[in-house]
Length: 397
Ligand code: VJV
Ligand code: CA
Ligand code: ZN
Image (cartoon, rainbow, N blue to C red; front, side, top):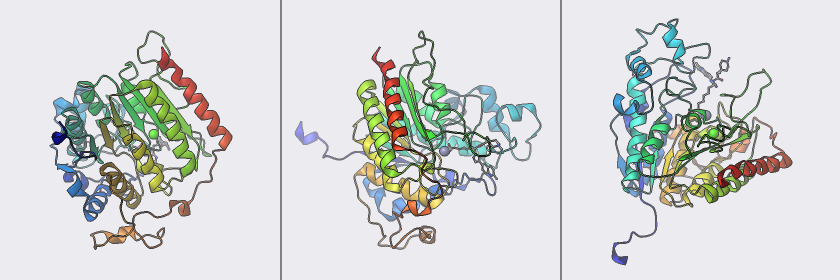
């Protein structure tokens, strides 16, 4: 059979519908879909499109979204426009729209936007199921806060849940890993009653000086899913609460130590990695001090487990760093190393010539943008790992 074997290296597919870029949440809203334009420009500038299969997936249909979401919610979401929205309508508020913070505004093309990013995650999962690729990437997805009948934290449709459900049609056990700075609460909640999905999230957790918990306020170390021993999902969630300012070395150690154990104990048949870029240093909403290569080392680590891998985006609110990170992580998937400077001139190049670099454009030192003191002591992280490994004993029977 050796003649038919693939050369070493992974078959990677990139699922991207460019129409997603043109949607706007509104002026000064932190979520900016045009960060995906920047990402694509970098990916193309480095020639990575020649190393992957490229797909332009169609938008998901309402039927497909109804595999997780409630009909009434979808009917509302598909019908609401900035023109017909009634902010004091009880339905509007109960579905998570508007409110004081306006995290989830109603904007032009909202339904189009959510169907596009969801269609891309479902198509990526489909590719893995059909063995068309070893790693499938959708940087426009990863909207982990959405619930079946509720928009939350910039997320309207939970494309991750839909993709995992699709993977479950072929794979017995799916591991979900979430390195966005926020807790992946929507994915955790969706699978709390099954042992076929193990969800794990690393995130900032704690109360701020102003008395507000860091969004969404859940995900402490003792939250492991249902406690009822009759519930199949018991112990199938792992939360790693982290304080401000964690650095590269600490995060890589935490991630590597804990994830290795989860793989050993759960032995998943497929992995979904939400690679939210708001865990980088200098993020507008985040609190951590990670550099791009430390963030990317999580992707490298997960890739090394050699399971079908769905890699998706998520948060990330300093667009040039989001683009750098996701370009770097695309390169990690295909096994390419990128130069810090580009041989050719690219559109939007000014965006990458920010204050933080010293010459190159791709790997600035984000520690220089330090705004958060490191509140994570060595001793505390040691205890956290011990507690996490203790939590995993649920998996032993
Ligand atoms: O913290 C919150 C919401 C509150 C309610 C209102 N009080 C005053 C403060 C707390 C609960 N929401 C977070 C949501 C973060 C979502 C992260 C999403 C992801 O990365 O995990 C996945 C994609 C929050 N933090 C910052 C903001 N909202 C924020 C929202 C805005 C804004 C500025 C900051 C909305 C509109 C505008 N500016 C114009
Ligand atoms: Ca997370
Ligand atoms: Zn986030």
